[in-house]
Image (tube, rainbow, N blue to C red; front, side, top):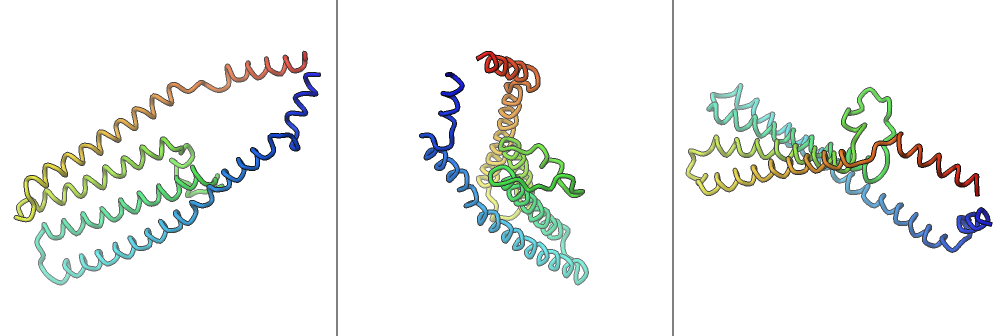
Length: 206
């Protein structure tokens, strides 16, 4: 009698079918995010174009004149900034698509990133926070180099330093929360296996 009740409750034509269809529709809605990631790819192309223009400007200054060392350093820092933002875009595009939309199915590919094999929402947050810290460091270094100019005030230096420190503290907090969540998760392969075996025995006995 108990087995019969379970089979009736789990049939596709039972009362749970409308809710299941709603769940499938909500799960299918994840594909709405695809245009967002495609738009980020377009933004990546724009940053590549900007990088090439800045690189051409650096070549013209370096071989066509005698620019100041500070000027060259600022242009190089600008190039590094573009590269780090581009890396941030790659992490958001690949990691976000893999986590929230669909698997990329690139297992075994020689160019598969190592971090993609164990990426999840928490890992992605930590990596994005670290990338933002790197970008903020570049901007802060550019401001320190230009600190002698009258356009850079002490108030601006203090506030941007505090903002950078806020990014650092936020990244540390995210990493600590991720570590605590990893430590609080149950270990698979021990208790789960025993529980599933006990459940199987109970079903057979019924």
